[in-house]
Image 1 (cartoon, each protein chain N blue to C red):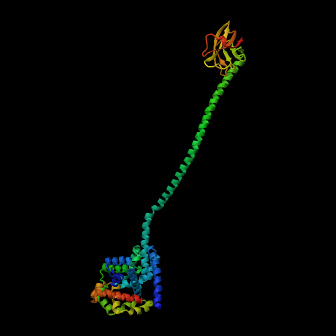
Image 2: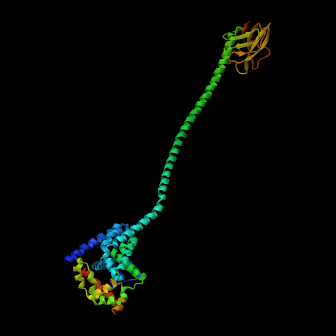
Length: 265
Length: 190
């Protein structure tokens, strides 16, 4: 289209003086947006008519401005009132938001505390396990000590008991340095042996204690080298005591070649 | 350059600067800016409204309604589509026409007696012209009377150019070219 022809057609003047249909107004606006020359011409016409209108101004009644401003204020207040109804939940939601913040902080603190205490708990419970283990160990030790003590006590009792006589058996040529002691209560036949410096018996072998009466050996039981005074079989009569090395479980008759210690009563 | 032209340039730049500020304030719904707009433009708009409805009481109602529309529809004003005054002017014109229709009042343009007065004595319209625009008035008076008549009928009386063509027994094209010539002449003067 020819822009100059469009401008000089007078349609822009009709636009500014308000003498166009809605469709025509939109067309003018669209073309003005597209063509700067039309926009410029339109603005010049607008300014001229604006001043022309100013020239023909008529003062409205003095009260009109206040009436308008009051109406606007009322509308705004109504809007504000309307908004207040909507706004009322706002503080609640603020409280909710605060509560949510507080809750999340508490949750965080709780989790952090849980982690802290869980770690602490883990440390403590492993420490506790250690202590328990120690305790168990100590209890075992205690049991051992108690047993040892009882052992010692009974040994001491045997040794101290005036009813017992202690007979020290001397080492024979097979093991001259060895000694052993029997504690014997002649009255009731209780017999104990302390044979702790005998040589280790070797596999499949066990020491056996014999009582000798009138030249006959009487089995008094087998024993291990365990550091303790060991109770043996009851022997009511004996002239002498001897220890031989025998197969495990002992023999019916002593192996004289393996006689280690001997003592007469 | 004449003092008028100087003044024109100054005014134009002032108007430009203020208009932008006014638009921003209006669209931000600042009622103190609406007050400024009213003080600046209400009398010009009221001048158009009173000429359209020919009734002081109705004109005041229309001005009020138009300003409430200006306030409520501020967001729909687009500066790139035209000047703020043109937009407000259209709102006032439409409000006036709506008021006339709703009241069953006939548009004054159809009361021949008023028109004949106007047409016979086109200068009558300047009776209430502002004192500070006397100089301009004299200049505008230099416009060819038939041109002024044309501008006033369309701009102030709400005539369509078809109605003017009928009223003045003039071809439609002539009405349009004369309106353009008249406004071009106005642009040179103002």
